[in-house]
Each structure stands twice: as C-alpha cells, then as structure tokens.
Length: 471
Image (cartoon, rainbow, N blue to C red; front, top):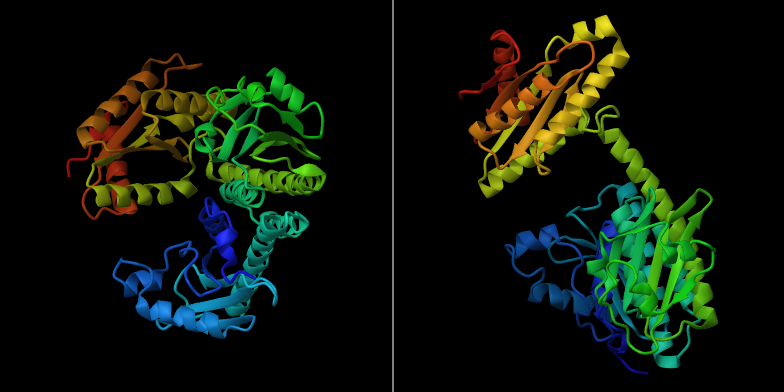
C-alpha cells in the first residue's frame, strides 16, 4: 500500500477545514504524513513557538527532528512534551493496515497542564479531534481509492457530534461549510439564515462562495418559497439559481449536482443550505448528507438563539444601544486600537436635563418615549462607525473613533440642537454634553471622568450647553 496516502487527499480546502476545527475546539492541530513530513501547518499561533522563534516560523530544526522521532516511535497514541515544554497529544491516523499519517494536538495557549482536571479536559478534547479527523481522512481515502462512500456516515457523525456542542454561531457556520467541502469535494457550499422575512447568506465556501456572504433573498421569492414548500431538498440547475442575487454570473461545470436543503426545526425555518458537487451524491450519499443537514439545523438553531440572548444581554432594551456592562470593554478596545494605530478618539458624555422631573410629572411611560426618541436623534446625528451606549438612566455615552476633540464637539452640538428643536410631548427637552479627547495612557475611567466633568460644567452653565474638556 502507498506509504504516503495523504497525497490522495484533496488539499485544496483541507487547511481551512483543519483551522475551522481548531478554532471550534480552541486547540492547535498539526498533521504529518506517513513518512513524518509535515502535511499541514499549525492551525493557530503557538505562543511558546512564537516566543522561541521571535515571531518567525512556528518551528525550527530541533522541533522537526523531535516530531519525526515521535512519529517514528508512536504505536497508537501518546502524550508528549516538545523540546520547549509544549504539551502535545500525538495520535497515529488510520488503521494498523492503513498508514495515513500522524496527528499532533496542542493547547491553543502555553500551559504546563499541571492541574489534573485541566489535563483530562485537554486529553478529552484532543481525542474528539482525533476521532473526527481520522474518520474524515478515512472517508476521503476510501472514496478515492475504492470508490466507496460507506465511511461518510462515520465522519458525518463525528463532525455532527462536535457541531452540536459548539455555541458560537460563526464557528458552527465555518465547521458546516468547510466539512462539507472536504467530505464531498464540493465546489461550493453556502448557508443562509432566516432574519425576519428574508434569508441572509451567513457563510459561503468554495468557488465564489465568499461573494455570496451578505446577499439577501426574501422568503416570498418564488424560488425560496419553492425550497421551503417541502422538507426534502430541491435539486436545482445553475440557471434556476441565477435568479437569486449573488448567483447572476455563476457558472457550473457539466454534471455538477446542486442541492438546496431547507433547514427546519420544531421552531420553524432556521435557514437553508446549498451544496454544489462535481458528481452525483447517489442514494447513500444523499441519505448521509440529509442526516448531517438535520444535525446542522439543530446546531444553527442553538447557536442563533444563544447569539440573540447574548446580544440582548449586551443591549439596552429601550434604546437598542449598547448597555453599561459592555461599554467598558468596547471603550477599552477602542483605546487600545487608537494607541496602536496612532489615531485620535473622543468621547461624548450626555445627560438629559431635568429628566427626573419630567418622569415625576408625566409618568415613566412618557419618560420612556423621550429616551427612545433621544436615542433615535443621537443615532441620526452620528456615523455608522461611532458607538452609542446608554450609560444609565438618562445618561448616554458616544464613542467617536478617529475624531479629534474639536470635531467631536461639532457632533455634540448637532445632537444638542436636534434634541432642543424636536417637538417632544408635554414640554421641550434639552441635554447637556461634555466632550473629552483621549490622551496618551488614558484609561477607561480617566477618559470617562474627564467627559463627565465636562458635562457637569455644561450643567453649571445653565444646562442645554456643551463643554469641551480643556486638558
């Protein structure tokens, strides 16, 4: 039997699949062929290797010699420590009769795994990665060498088991599309998710797949209605797909089979999944793929729900702005970015004047209307790249990346005037605003304190004013 079976594996998308698997499981993956030569690179940056090699290659001759020696003496699996102290789980890929190669799984960050619980958790994760990769390789090789697809089901099962345990939507989407590209050697795979009354393409891999991302198709579109009129997949021609935005200039090789699967759960429509394969899947392949699609629908429904809950936890329900809990993290990130790239950044601290008196006089429902309309006026006065937050009660924070203090003051004045002139119910509403430009070595607290102090000065001047922090 060939001593380097990995040469039979279509490597066009393997690294993407491997990297996706690594990100999904938060572990580093490295694969060697049967001769101990590297087949793929590390999926994630190895902190220790970067430190040792001063930002250069993630390995050196000492590491390569270690890997070759480890692969040559590996019986089935073992836990190793590299010359620089990085813990690795090593596995032999394939059966005793079929030499495929070797798998190394390492933590995504430098750790000595001294805690027993931490070590067991890592070994469990590494074993799940091994099972998945081994089955996928076996499925691909059996199809390439023998023309069989029997092992597809095993690889689909292993990937599906991982997929339904992942809660990050982006990682689920990547794992779904990359694994289908690998297992079925597809030319194109895409996933569209339901957003209200439309389908929006969230991920696309393969030929022109990235160009589909972000395209929207209304649920009332005749072709989309046709796809969701049944639970079975629809076999489409490229001419039929061309009626959808994103597919206008797409071409398909003769014999390409295009299948679009509606993604249903007990809660209704989740979205759709499309795959274009160069050869017919056949009855067995279609059944196996349908099993995978069912798992994918559940995984996407779970991840979508969790993302929605996370967004709701980060967002003020009344205004739709980010809430105070998230503000600090966002502002800290913007401060770091401004320092790294050397651009300006400013913050506006805004307080609605006499809001408590308005609430006490006209009621909290009337106060909610003021807050909602004020948020709308702020949104209409800033750029899409600016970030608005409800800081608490009647206080708002607006972060303006790439903006000097003087320019931020102009934005603040625009907001002040829009509030002053808007015909709110019951009486006129005004606001006081303070502006502060980020300085070198500013912290979140120091920047907010200066903007707050400027807002206080605006209040002291009689309200309905703005002040620019002079420091």
